[in-house]
Amino acid sequence: MRKILLLHTGGTLGMAPSGEPASLAPGPFLDHLLVQVPELGQLARLSVEVPFNQDSACLEPAHILTLTRRVRESATSYDGFVIIHGTDTMAFSASCLGFLLADLGKPVVLTGSQRPLAFVRSDARSNLVNAVDLACRAIPEIGICFGTHWLRGVATDKLSVHQFEAFQSPNLAPLAEIGAEIQLHPEAGAFTRQVPAGLGAQLDLNIHTITPHPGMSWFAAPAGAKAVLILAFGAGNLPMDRPDLKVFMEDCRQRRLPVVVISQCPYGGVDLSAYELGRKAEELGALSGGLHTRWAALAKLALVLGGGGGLPETREAFSVQWAGEPIRDEVWPQA
Ligand code: ASP
Image (cartoon, rainbow, N blue to C red; front, top):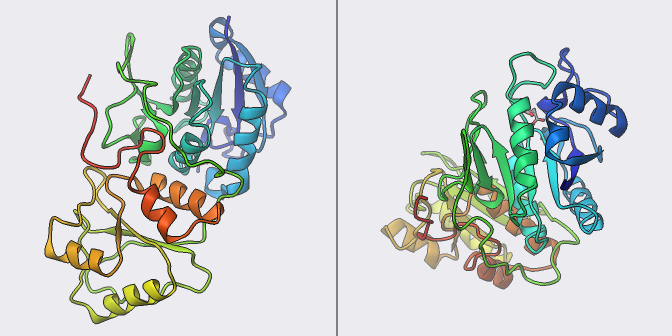
């Protein structure tokens, strides 16, 4: 039987019926899991740790680094890892871990639920069983298992507050379709790992994120911002006829702040050459984030900045795949 380490970090899945985070020690939590979902014991030899137990809205970079460290430290003792995580920031954690653990060579499956495990009608049970099953399959992917899909972490976003299919990877086919059978995508596990060496000791999230809307005033990026991420309209369009936007871009240029542009639309991505407005933004220094999700873009920026990188490193980071994240138009054919 495969040995799986289950790291519980909080979120809805482990909540008590009262809505409070359950107070959890690893031993009692494993007992609780095996009482609620005894079939887990038939799938794998499970160990449980609770590195922290909180609503994932309170996630900080230190939590990501803790998870990375625990997985790496125990990599030789386990065949795979399951991380129970709140859904709110799961796509961000999955993106960071997708880069930080790209070379692990073992499955890391993040999961959670929309309803607590303690509820009679809950998606927690099936998500857990599927996650443990996937973690036993020796496919070296860092992904989110939720509802009927396993999705590559660096391509995911949470798209529903309440549906059991809460996550999607809009620009990449799922790693697996989960139905009566688990149907794996033929290319699951096959991606080139090229995260630049030396990154990962720090995540610097001093990133000024802007979601423009029509008529918005453009104020200078706050002091302390190390980079700007703009979720632009459609293919990367911004109202370049606005003088305050030109002043904003010039200010970023003088401060050598990287300005990365991704799309507000989950499907498709940025092509700054598609419209005059995009070309103008590029002339003023905007870097295309292509198909990066906002979470993958933030994770990349945080790693580049955390490693002491600036404008050239950011430009390079957004022009290449680090760990199978969609960056330009090429997407897998549907399986
Ligand atoms: N607020 C919760 C969390 O992200 C939501 C959930 O787990 O579904 O921790």
